[in-house]
Length: 164
Image (cartoon, rainbow, N blue to C red; front, side):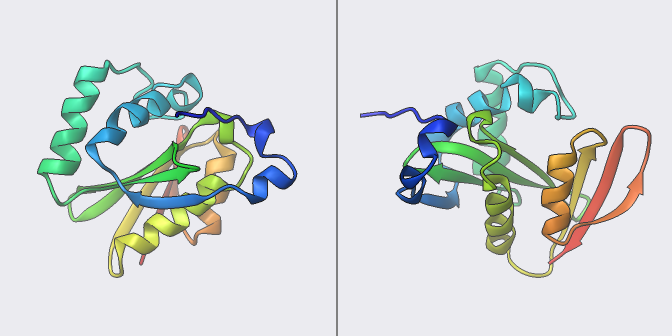
């Protein structure tokens, strides 16, 4: 049985019964990640704000995370429902991070938890870079809370780095 949750259902004592788990992606997670990624609130903070068709997304995810073993993707399970993802894509010897949470779960510190645990799962000795739009203050705060430092800023983005 699938149960859909919204933020209001987690207020008060129900919130204490929630089980969170960060785990490696499986192929059955691809559609749910696509749903989160294509949400307008996620797309407006993305480098690519266009909606992506499911078939194109599925092929890209399979190539990126199941064929190429240099990249990593973790998902946040919340009572057995994927509500977020954190990707690490290797480019020029550094990992570029991308993170998103289902908008129904904003304001619950889940992005911070997902980021913190995903970084631990990555292991030590990796340089991780993040690119955050200037208006996305919530993401900036989450990354700074997790020891990312701004190394550059332009008229569109903050550029942050972390060496684990």
